[in-house]
Image (cartoon, rainbow over all chains, first blue to last red; front, side, top):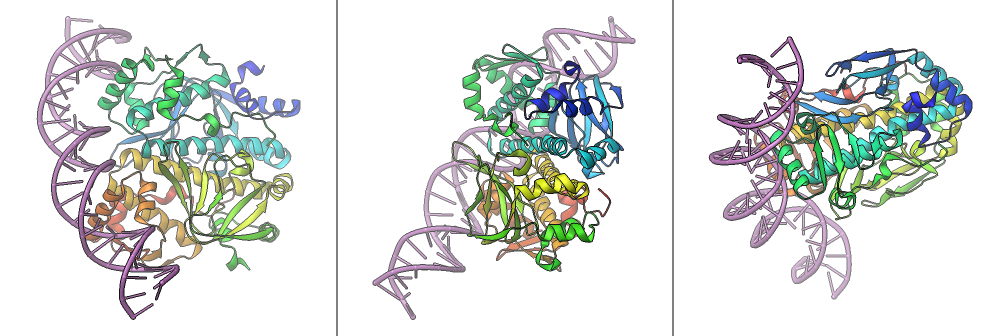
Length: 241
Length: 241
DNA sequence: CGAGGTCTTGAAGACGATCAACAAACGTGG
DNA sequence: CCACGTTTGTTGATCGTCTTCAAGACCTCG
């Protein structure tokens, strides 16, 4: 069933799939595997023979410098093909780490290879999925370079809302975000203390609250304006690829 | 001739190409076009019907916020398939701007489509090229989040050296980098003044000089150490994709 | 109940931004 | 050829955002 495959939902927010393509996608996963919170799904330098789809739970990409400090480069939500990059890259340049208990779908690289051999349209769609990651990266670079701390936080919460919506994980103005303030700081490039204070400021200004692992957006227009959020980089448009 | 196609050189630093693939690549470019410095090659929001390869000159990707401030998200050197992203994305999320007078190869999307229909290996190779951009983006996020200003500058100069080398644009310990300190600052997420001071500090410490649009690395080991530079994210390894 | 993780708040200080002024290099037209 | 404006690089001074260090409150879980 489609319902059990959020990654098909994610794709179908961007392009039409034929019945056959949907079937192939559904059969892509050879098995599922569960990961515990903080457990690495794939590690920097790995040469995996399969790619990982996030079916349930939250994960992130991160890089750790030799001096031990860590930077999260992307958050991943259900439906994200977290490790599709390793298929063309062969050797991974970063970690993928489970933030919560996660259900991961394992997709052998041979099957992806088969798709590139026989299903050109589906190949382009998978390619697109990795380029959305690249677009998210770019938007983060802009944020880290040119947005203030509050605007950066605001933008992240806007982004997550826009990404969780297509997979049905936004209820009203709220969504579940099982991430600590420390992890948030590692993603924003801020110190924990400052993140905490800026969250308090967003709360005080009535823009949003983040408590009990739940983001509630109180003033969407105000938040979007502060963040200068424009969702077009997420490619949320149904069109032939 | 291969010599006239730096983008084939770039690819051949990552994977073997068959004779046929090399021929197809050489014929990919329907025509070339010249751009002047500061001229946009493609613009945010464009829906180009072709992709652009940078044959000569330097360019960058950048995003401009509504409030006018700009962030460069990647520098491009000869051989980079600067606008391959627009093929699966359809609508571009950023600008590509010529930094110098540039020679651009125009590749119609239909030809790329044809490749995905008939040449699976070459498709994977092109896919790889876009994922290297994503890996560069990730490394920049790490830099902006967790590296000091000097380390960030050092890392950028290391990266450019490693990228210019495969296309034969590094001579000894020097390479040409026709970029102003203002543009450097827009890429680093720093103010012009601070970039200038940190460049002076790198010079004073004997690590590198950047003058007359030329970077000269004086102490590669020291620079790599300061930057914590590890080139593996650039995928500079010949292996089957 | 104590241990450890998370959130919160205070205070001090550093890194980098902003404002301002000037020097040097360059192209243009007189 | 020089005068001129423009762009780029350089330096000083001040200010503010964010970091670091530190400590206490709250929570869950053994």
